[in-house]
Length: 265
Ligand SMILES: [Zn+2]
Ligand SMILES: [Zn+2]
Image (cartoon, rainbow, N blue to C red; front, side):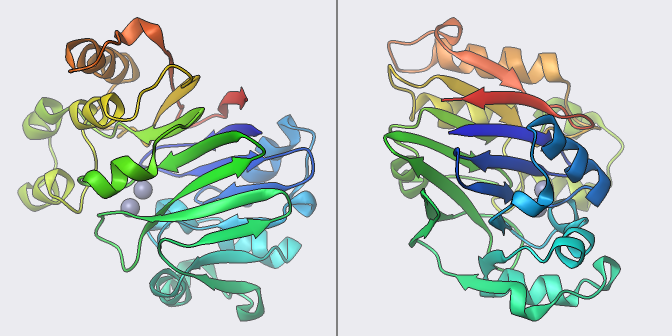
């Protein structure tokens, strides 16, 4: 399995997940051009895509969906609530409704040789989901845009080889920053985004000896810095109630503006 972040952050998200035979995009929140360029890095074209999975209808996840789906006619999979949200988002233009496929929470789907599981997440969107992927014995997940997590989340993220996990903000930067009060409350709330510390805490409950790659994702431009996210998560792991130290794992930070983090497991 290969995973590749074309873009990740509060200004646009699109992550490639695939096997030798099957090619999937999680979210299409950047321009069609950037998606084409990102896939080209992998010697792929959007024509090769078997599916676009959408996590939720916020514009940083669907901004390029109209263009890419009209140009290439790629099937789109997402929840009923997200489908409604997509169809209401006029700025992305018309979507051919025959390309839209409804999926449900806590269900497994097979596309080509990839098994996909849907995981419900806590976020201020209609019916947001995260995805877990399995190819042969390899497992990975893309878990971003969640304000909080619980035992259900943790149990769905066990035994992964790789994880893209949100580390959205540094709480102090957010609190001191220029965002309006209500927006700050939204981001900090249970339906907002995971802070660096929460991200590190969630990680400590899913770490195991064979976790190979951790990619900190969906960083805020205003309220975080890559080095800060990296150090905060590493120290949460070291201080956490496990046998592990932050240095025991390959941790990287997905870039907001350029592709990064090609992972092969
Ligand atoms: Zn969102
Ligand atoms: Zn987002």
